[in-house]
View 1 (cartoon, one colour):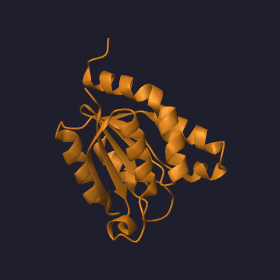
View 2: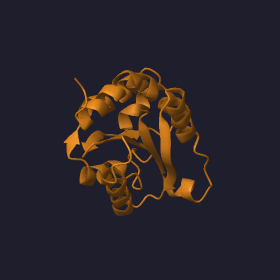
View 3: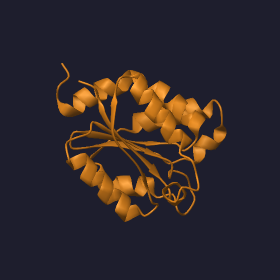
Length: 159
């Protein structure tokens, strides 16, 4: 059965349509290439509480295996995705975020200013992804070998 993915790009500029979601497009393409199914894709605003509520509702629905958020993990005042995640996740997977940053650092030391996290709520993985289209491609490459096992372990179906 294919992995079910929800993809939420975070930022008022994406909601208003003033910015194109190229990073989200790259995650979408990577997921489809792996045979995964995108069951939800949406732009969400910068409001931390609304985002946390949306993540909780999606994770608790039991219909997705992985929720990717795109953008909103920097140090600007409007970047509140990690704070929303702190309200949502029950377990943390620091190795995933560390791996994403480690790979990206090879190309740009500016990744050191990102605050993305990864965690688990119920039987759903939640992973913050960067807003750069190139960084997202690299992130998907380093995550690809571990995500299926992570989903199986969270669901209790791994051997």
